[in-house]
Amino acid sequence: MKAKFLYHFSILLFSGLLLFSCNGDDDHWGTNEFVAAFKNPSESIPENNPEIEIQIVFSEKAANDGWVKIDFNGHNVSYGETADFITLPAAEEGVITVPIQKNTEQTVFTIKRLTEVLPEDDKSVEFSIVNIEMPGKTTQIQGNKTVLVSFSETAALGGTISPEVGGPNEPNQVYLELRTKKETAIRRDTWDLGFFSGDDFRVRLNGSLFMFAGKLSSTNIDEISSAEVQELKTKMGFLIEDSDQYVDDPSGIITGTAIEGISVNDIENHVYLLNLGNEIGTDTPEPGGVAIAGEERGYMKIRILRQGDDYILQYAEVEATTHQQVVISKTEGYNFTFFSLITENIVSVEPESNRWDLNFTVKTEVEELPGAGFTAYGYSDYVETNPLGNVKAYRVYTDEFSYDEFSVNNIDETKFTLDQRTIGASWRKVTPPDKYLYDNIFYIVKDSDGNYYKLKFTALENENGIRGYPEFKYDLLQ
Figure 1 (cartoon, rainbow, N blue to C red):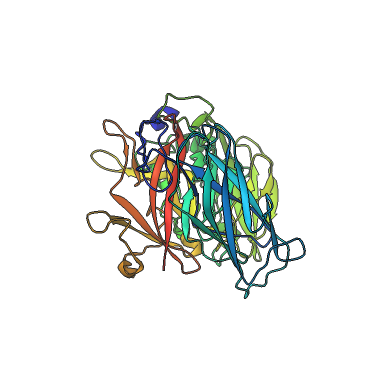
Figure 2: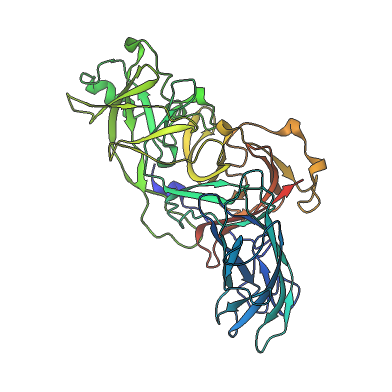
């Protein structure tokens, strides 16, 4: 796949909570005053890191140095070095004074939890903005005036998230857990094969690199037909009819892998030719475009066997007459165990199966060709859900419900699907002649813990029109 197939342009639409214009004459808060608000309405302090930063965002760049004054009320907790928590800056007479620096667009303060919190504990602090000082400007408290910080894990009320996709080369896959706002970013060339940890013995390809797999007739990895390899190479690529047979089912169904289920009978496990896809792109595209596909990575051959509850992976260069072999175990609590053919190591990629909801990624999809037949094809700006973690979703159009008015009472359980394409690329259109972020669609997501969220995308580009900077807002439905 050449990168030119994936160079698209898009228009950034500014909408939603806490998105501001860079033009000082254009006021999205409905006021010309300097406004400060908490970025999110709720936060949780994670068990493994008892310290978090709370962000306060501004309606415009600060014209001068100033400060925000915040008071707080604790629920089952007390403040102080010998008590449950402290803040940086420290509170004086129950008020925290957080400095604002000139030419900045946000400020932060830190909360440190000092005592242990048990899962059944109900401990929290509500922080409220009570005053804003900005010399030379009138000020106003608007937006998220309060933030509720829970000392044990609770479902976030929502907020605004900007996944660190990494710009127009989109080098990262970003896994997000909505109920904690936890973000896990990994370079998408970190891994090549994912070995399923469930009951089945299945192996997934890294579709973010545009990998293909085709079965050869041989069951001996050291003796394969050169002619058969050459013929198969011509079938594995984008915009080639029937090339969809050599990629994983884009729905995420585990029985739809391009590599067949691994049999307990070795003689039934054939050698596969792998098209390793493309390196991560390094070109700098024009504003509005992407450059996600770099140099071709070449080919390898693999054969996969079973050994009890483990996998045996055999791998080699295509022309080699010997091979390497490694035993790969299933990882309890995770969807897959991941392996890199480049570093020849098991690597950490996804969080635990029930600890992520969305994956922002480059994606190999399947498209219908003009006339007849199907082909594999590459997408940027793709958002997968986690069906193997029982995360479900469905799409809502604003001619049915507005985002703001949609409530927990409007949820339709019959519309939820376990299909990782439910969001996919449906939130934006970037092919000519029309290029835009859809503003008539939002999504309902049910996470693995049974929490319901509504979610709407608010940005595809940054303020300079550069792709690879998505943003969305979401709210807990309760």
